[in-house]
Image (cartoon, rainbow, N blue to C red):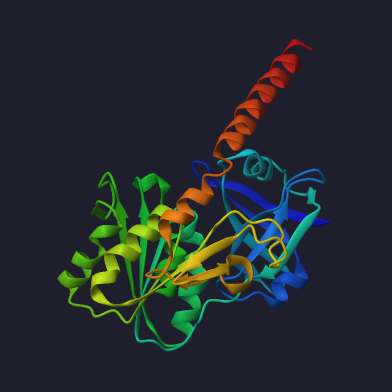
Length: 285
Protein backbone atom coordinates (compact mmCIF):
# COMPACT_ATOMS: atom_id res chain seq x y z
CA UNK A 1 0.00 0.00 0.00
CA UNK A 2 1.17 3.53 -0.80
CA UNK A 3 0.25 6.40 1.49
CA UNK A 4 -1.04 9.71 0.11
CA UNK A 5 0.74 12.58 1.86
CA UNK A 6 -0.65 15.39 -0.31
CA UNK A 7 -3.65 15.66 -2.62
CA UNK A 8 -4.99 19.08 -3.49
CA UNK A 9 -6.37 21.01 -6.43
CA UNK A 10 -3.76 23.47 -7.71
CA UNK A 11 -5.88 24.93 -10.53
CA UNK A 12 -9.43 24.00 -11.57
CA UNK A 13 -9.66 20.32 -12.51
CA UNK A 14 -5.99 19.57 -11.83
CA UNK A 15 -4.72 17.95 -8.62
CA UNK A 16 -1.23 17.60 -7.22
CA UNK A 17 -0.79 14.22 -5.50
CA UNK A 18 2.28 13.24 -3.49
CA UNK A 19 2.76 9.57 -2.61
CA UNK A 20 5.09 7.71 -0.28
CA UNK A 21 6.98 5.40 -2.64
CA UNK A 22 10.64 5.25 -1.53
CA UNK A 23 11.78 2.63 -4.03
CA UNK A 24 10.43 4.66 -6.94
CA UNK A 25 11.74 7.94 -5.53
CA UNK A 26 15.19 6.43 -5.20
CA UNK A 27 15.45 5.47 -8.86
CA UNK A 28 13.29 7.86 -10.89
CA UNK A 29 14.81 10.11 -13.55
CA UNK A 30 13.34 12.99 -15.55
CA UNK A 31 10.82 11.86 -18.16
CA UNK A 32 9.72 8.61 -16.51
CA UNK A 33 6.22 7.70 -15.38
CA UNK A 34 4.34 5.63 -12.84
CA UNK A 35 1.19 3.51 -13.06
CA UNK A 36 -1.40 3.97 -10.31
CA UNK A 37 -4.66 2.39 -9.17
CA UNK A 38 -7.12 4.29 -6.99
CA UNK A 39 -8.57 1.13 -5.38
CA UNK A 40 -8.42 -2.66 -5.55
CA UNK A 41 -11.04 -2.84 -8.29
CA UNK A 42 -9.73 0.15 -10.25
CA UNK A 43 -8.02 0.36 -13.61
CA UNK A 44 -4.31 1.08 -14.01
CA UNK A 45 -3.43 4.45 -15.50
CA UNK A 46 -0.03 5.97 -16.39
CA UNK A 47 0.96 9.37 -15.01
CA UNK A 48 4.20 11.25 -15.59
CA UNK A 49 6.28 11.81 -12.46
CA UNK A 50 6.40 15.57 -11.94
CA UNK A 51 8.77 15.72 -8.97
CA UNK A 52 10.32 13.60 -6.24
CA UNK A 53 12.13 13.79 -2.93
CA UNK A 54 14.66 10.99 -2.54
CA UNK A 55 15.31 11.81 1.15
CA UNK A 56 11.61 11.68 2.07
CA UNK A 57 10.89 8.80 -0.30
CA UNK A 58 8.04 10.58 -2.09
CA UNK A 59 6.99 11.15 -5.68
CA UNK A 60 4.51 13.70 -7.04
CA UNK A 61 2.12 13.47 -9.99
CA UNK A 62 -0.29 15.97 -11.46
CA UNK A 63 -3.75 14.60 -12.29
CA UNK A 64 -6.18 16.07 -14.80
CA UNK A 65 -9.60 14.90 -13.61
CA UNK A 66 -11.22 13.90 -16.87
CA UNK A 67 -12.65 10.42 -16.32
CA UNK A 68 -13.71 7.91 -13.69
CA UNK A 69 -10.27 6.85 -12.45
CA UNK A 70 -8.73 10.30 -12.36
CA UNK A 71 -11.78 11.53 -10.44
CA UNK A 72 -11.34 8.67 -7.95
CA UNK A 73 -7.67 9.54 -7.48
CA UNK A 74 -8.42 13.23 -6.99
CA UNK A 75 -10.98 12.35 -4.29
CA UNK A 76 -8.60 10.30 -2.11
CA UNK A 77 -7.99 11.95 1.25
CA UNK A 78 -4.54 12.64 2.66
CA UNK A 79 -3.46 9.79 4.93
CA UNK A 80 -5.29 7.14 2.90
CA UNK A 81 -3.54 4.50 0.82
CA UNK A 82 -3.68 3.38 -2.80
CA UNK A 83 -2.98 -0.27 -3.69
CA UNK A 84 -0.74 0.25 -6.71
CA UNK A 85 2.16 2.53 -7.63
CA UNK A 86 4.44 0.86 -10.18
CA UNK A 87 7.58 2.50 -11.47
CA UNK A 88 9.69 4.19 -12.48
CA UNK A 89 8.59 3.09 -15.96
CA UNK A 90 9.68 4.13 -19.43
CA UNK A 91 13.02 5.48 -20.56
CA UNK A 92 14.33 8.70 -19.04
CA UNK A 93 14.45 11.75 -21.28
CA UNK A 94 17.83 12.14 -22.98
CA UNK A 95 19.66 14.81 -21.01
CA UNK A 96 22.86 16.14 -22.57
CA UNK A 97 24.46 19.51 -23.18
CA UNK A 98 22.57 20.49 -26.33
CA UNK A 99 22.95 24.27 -26.08
CA UNK A 100 19.61 26.08 -25.98
CA UNK A 101 16.59 23.89 -25.25
CA UNK A 102 12.95 24.93 -25.58
CA UNK A 103 10.81 23.06 -23.01
CA UNK A 104 7.09 23.31 -23.76
CA UNK A 105 4.41 22.23 -21.28
CA UNK A 106 0.65 22.55 -21.42
CA UNK A 107 -2.03 21.46 -18.92
CA UNK A 108 -0.61 18.49 -16.94
CA UNK A 109 2.48 18.81 -19.11
CA UNK A 110 3.49 21.97 -17.24
CA UNK A 111 4.31 19.73 -14.28
CA UNK A 112 5.98 16.89 -16.18
CA UNK A 113 8.24 19.26 -18.14
CA UNK A 114 9.57 20.68 -14.84
CA UNK A 115 12.02 17.86 -13.90
CA UNK A 116 13.22 17.78 -17.52
CA UNK A 117 13.95 21.53 -17.50
CA UNK A 118 15.70 21.11 -14.13
CA UNK A 119 17.90 18.28 -15.40
CA UNK A 120 18.77 20.18 -18.57
CA UNK A 121 19.74 23.23 -16.55
CA UNK A 122 21.97 21.10 -14.33
CA UNK A 123 23.75 19.94 -17.52
CA UNK A 124 24.57 23.53 -18.39
CA UNK A 125 21.95 24.13 -21.09
CA UNK A 126 20.23 27.43 -21.66
CA UNK A 127 16.60 26.54 -20.90
CA UNK A 128 13.64 28.43 -22.32
CA UNK A 129 10.44 27.18 -20.70
CA UNK A 130 7.04 27.73 -22.30
CA UNK A 131 3.78 27.37 -20.36
CA UNK A 132 0.57 27.16 -22.39
CA UNK A 133 -3.04 27.24 -21.13
CA UNK A 134 -6.48 28.46 -22.12
CA UNK A 135 -6.34 31.24 -19.52
CA UNK A 136 -4.06 32.65 -16.82
CA UNK A 137 -6.00 30.96 -13.99
CA UNK A 138 -4.93 27.58 -15.39
CA UNK A 139 -1.20 28.33 -15.13
CA UNK A 140 0.67 26.86 -12.16
CA UNK A 141 4.23 26.11 -10.97
CA UNK A 142 5.45 29.38 -12.47
CA UNK A 143 7.85 29.91 -9.56
CA UNK A 144 9.29 26.39 -9.90
CA UNK A 145 9.89 26.74 -13.64
CA UNK A 146 11.39 30.21 -13.24
CA UNK A 147 14.04 28.76 -10.90
CA UNK A 148 15.21 26.16 -13.44
CA UNK A 149 14.99 28.18 -16.66
CA UNK A 150 16.78 31.17 -18.15
CA UNK A 151 13.57 32.50 -19.63
CA UNK A 152 9.92 31.69 -18.96
CA UNK A 153 7.34 32.35 -21.69
CA UNK A 154 3.60 32.27 -20.98
CA UNK A 155 1.01 31.76 -23.71
CA UNK A 156 -2.73 31.94 -23.00
CA UNK A 157 -5.39 31.52 -25.62
CA UNK A 158 -7.45 34.38 -24.20
CA UNK A 159 -4.44 36.67 -23.74
CA UNK A 160 -4.93 37.14 -19.99
CA UNK A 161 -1.22 36.50 -19.37
CA UNK A 162 1.80 36.56 -21.64
CA UNK A 163 1.31 36.09 -25.36
CA UNK A 164 -2.17 35.61 -26.77
CA UNK A 165 -2.71 32.52 -28.90
CA UNK A 166 -1.44 28.96 -29.05
CA UNK A 167 1.89 27.13 -29.31
CA UNK A 168 1.94 27.84 -33.05
CA UNK A 169 3.15 31.33 -32.04
CA UNK A 170 6.42 29.95 -30.67
CA UNK A 171 8.47 30.26 -33.92
CA UNK A 172 7.50 33.92 -34.14
CA UNK A 173 8.44 34.49 -30.50
CA UNK A 174 11.85 32.90 -31.05
CA UNK A 175 12.47 34.93 -34.21
CA UNK A 176 11.52 38.07 -32.34
CA UNK A 177 14.00 37.25 -29.58
CA UNK A 178 16.64 36.14 -32.11
CA UNK A 179 17.41 33.05 -30.07
CA UNK A 180 18.56 29.96 -31.97
CA UNK A 181 17.16 26.75 -30.47
CA UNK A 182 19.07 23.47 -30.59
CA UNK A 183 16.36 21.12 -29.26
CA UNK A 184 12.66 21.20 -28.38
CA UNK A 185 11.02 18.96 -25.75
CA UNK A 186 7.23 18.92 -25.38
CA UNK A 187 4.94 17.47 -22.69
CA UNK A 188 1.16 17.75 -22.62
CA UNK A 189 -1.96 16.66 -24.46
CA UNK A 190 -1.71 15.01 -27.88
CA UNK A 191 -3.11 18.08 -29.65
CA UNK A 192 -0.52 20.38 -28.04
CA UNK A 193 2.35 18.06 -28.96
CA UNK A 194 1.15 17.67 -32.55
CA UNK A 195 0.76 21.42 -33.08
CA UNK A 196 4.16 22.13 -31.53
CA UNK A 197 5.85 19.46 -33.65
CA UNK A 198 4.16 20.82 -36.78
CA UNK A 199 5.34 24.34 -35.89
CA UNK A 200 8.97 23.24 -35.48
CA UNK A 201 9.13 20.97 -38.53
CA UNK A 202 10.02 23.68 -41.10
CA UNK A 203 13.04 24.70 -38.98
CA UNK A 204 14.54 21.21 -38.77
CA UNK A 205 14.98 21.40 -35.00
CA UNK A 206 15.03 18.02 -33.23
CA UNK A 207 11.67 17.87 -31.46
CA UNK A 208 11.00 15.30 -28.71
CA UNK A 209 7.46 14.49 -27.52
CA UNK A 210 6.32 12.35 -24.60
CA UNK A 211 3.51 10.20 -26.00
CA UNK A 212 0.46 9.31 -23.92
CA UNK A 213 -1.47 6.49 -25.64
CA UNK A 214 -3.84 4.14 -23.86
CA UNK A 215 -1.76 1.87 -21.62
CA UNK A 216 -2.39 -1.08 -19.30
CA UNK A 217 0.63 -2.91 -17.87
CA UNK A 218 3.41 -0.48 -18.77
CA UNK A 219 6.00 -3.22 -19.32
CA UNK A 220 5.53 -4.08 -23.01
CA UNK A 221 3.40 -7.18 -22.40
CA UNK A 222 -0.02 -6.10 -23.67
CA UNK A 223 0.82 -3.99 -26.73
CA UNK A 224 -2.06 -1.58 -26.12
CA UNK A 225 0.25 1.44 -26.19
CA UNK A 226 1.60 0.77 -29.67
CA UNK A 227 2.31 3.81 -31.80
CA UNK A 228 3.67 4.30 -35.32
CA UNK A 229 6.91 6.23 -35.43
CA UNK A 230 8.58 6.55 -38.82
CA UNK A 231 8.13 3.19 -40.51
CA UNK A 232 8.12 1.17 -37.29
CA UNK A 233 5.62 0.13 -34.64
CA UNK A 234 6.78 1.09 -31.14
CA UNK A 235 5.45 0.49 -27.63
CA UNK A 236 5.29 3.79 -25.75
CA UNK A 237 5.86 2.13 -22.38
CA UNK A 238 9.20 0.45 -23.15
CA UNK A 239 10.43 2.16 -26.32
CA UNK A 240 9.33 5.59 -25.09
CA UNK A 241 7.58 7.54 -23.84
CA UNK A 242 9.86 9.98 -25.73
CA UNK A 243 9.89 9.95 -29.53
CA UNK A 244 10.81 12.22 -32.41
CA UNK A 245 7.70 14.37 -32.88
CA UNK A 246 8.36 14.76 -36.60
CA UNK A 247 8.10 10.99 -37.13
CA UNK A 248 4.97 10.25 -35.09
CA UNK A 249 1.80 9.22 -36.94
CA UNK A 250 -0.40 11.77 -35.14
CA UNK A 251 -3.60 10.86 -37.00
CA UNK A 252 -3.37 7.23 -35.85
CA UNK A 253 -2.49 8.24 -32.28
CA UNK A 254 -5.45 10.62 -32.01
CA UNK A 255 -7.82 7.93 -33.34
CA UNK A 256 -6.52 5.29 -30.93
CA UNK A 257 -6.86 7.61 -27.95
CA UNK A 258 -10.57 7.99 -28.74
CA UNK A 259 -11.19 4.21 -28.69
CA UNK A 260 -12.98 4.18 -25.32
CA UNK A 261 -14.23 7.75 -25.26
CA UNK A 262 -17.90 6.70 -25.24
CA UNK A 263 -17.40 4.19 -22.41
CA UNK A 264 -15.37 6.69 -20.36
CA UNK A 265 -18.09 9.30 -20.78
CA UNK A 266 -20.72 6.83 -19.55
CA UNK A 267 -18.58 6.02 -16.48
CA UNK A 268 -18.11 9.71 -15.69
CA UNK A 269 -21.79 10.55 -16.08
CA UNK A 270 -22.85 7.50 -14.06
CA UNK A 271 -20.45 8.29 -11.22
CA UNK A 272 -21.81 11.83 -11.03
CA UNK A 273 -25.34 10.44 -10.79
CA UNK A 274 -24.23 8.09 -8.00
CA UNK A 275 -22.51 10.94 -6.15
CA UNK A 276 -25.68 13.02 -6.37
CA UNK A 277 -27.78 10.11 -5.12
CA UNK A 278 -25.48 9.56 -2.13
CA UNK A 279 -25.47 13.26 -1.29
CA UNK A 280 -29.30 13.35 -1.46
CA UNK A 281 -29.51 10.28 0.77
CA UNK A 282 -27.09 11.74 3.33
CA UNK A 283 -29.00 15.03 3.42
CA UNK A 284 -32.25 13.12 3.96
CA UNK A 285 -30.72 11.19 6.86
